[in-house]
Length: 180
Image 1 (cartoon, rainbow, N blue to C red):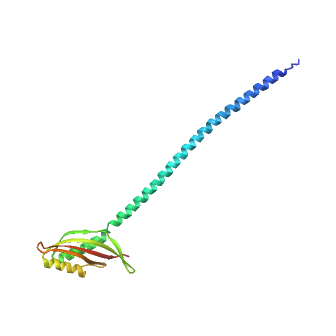
Image 2: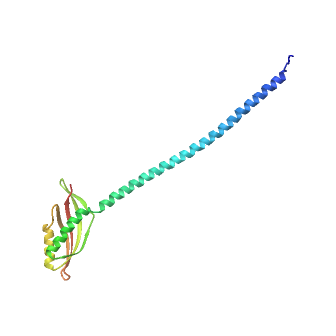
Image 3: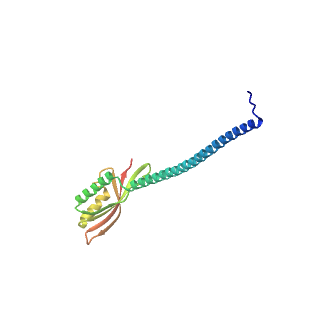
């Protein structure tokens, strides 16, 4: 028995196989298109996150630089405590030797001043003293001549305002310290 399959059946089988193959190709194409769209969306989200993180990093670096600059500026505004304590002790010792009372002592932030090749640290100090007129004049003389100042300090009196009736004086002086 020899079965002969007609051309129509063969054609139908080939067409069905082609439709099945085309259906599978179309299904795979649609599936891959969806995956590609999901990957593109994920890449776009990751790139947006990268841009945000880069901007955040730049902002954080800018804030750090500003904070460090502010810290440097703030630190420069404060005198070195050891130095100010040392010549503060000198001022109290001179006041005690001269018999005057230091009523107030205020200090500005130190600055630098160069004379030739030498750089000095200069602090302006305001002093309120009370005592007899002779004792106040002795104190001013001691400041002017540097009596009682330990090296490397020296002082230059900028202004004096005396109230003879109240036995007090306001003195402004610059204290020079050698900077290394």
